[in-house]
Image (cartoon, rainbow, N blue to C red; front, side, top):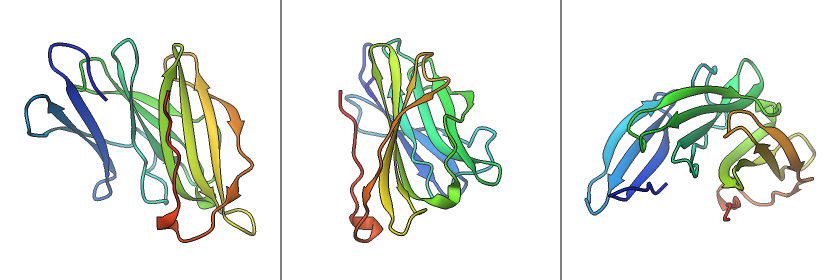
Length: 178
């Protein structure tokens, strides 16, 4: 996420499975070093899903606010997104709650990727995952939309899925470009 202002800034979010946190790193240009900022937890949710990753996703809104979504497990089988936000270019983070746009059973998800984009002042959230409920694993994409700055979401569309042939490491996950 590039920040506006006198200096360009790059923020990176990566999952640390050692303590179930998302670590935020910052690089201010033209400096060549990365600076550790903080570790964010699952924000009141039970844990990250048994898929083994919370698939963190950063999004900078046109207002300058930076959002972080991470896929979390809530209770025994429900999943959702822990939301964090920063209003000072990623320097400090505030817990924004846990958003549960729709229930996906943790046991039915094999691999997951989350992407977000701001479109016309609204936030669109895309979830790509491997659904293991049928006779054959299927790649599925769910699109959610938020009209309140990413605090709550409604499901807009869900693909029927396509065949997930091959081993997990060879499967591609789509990305979002606006």
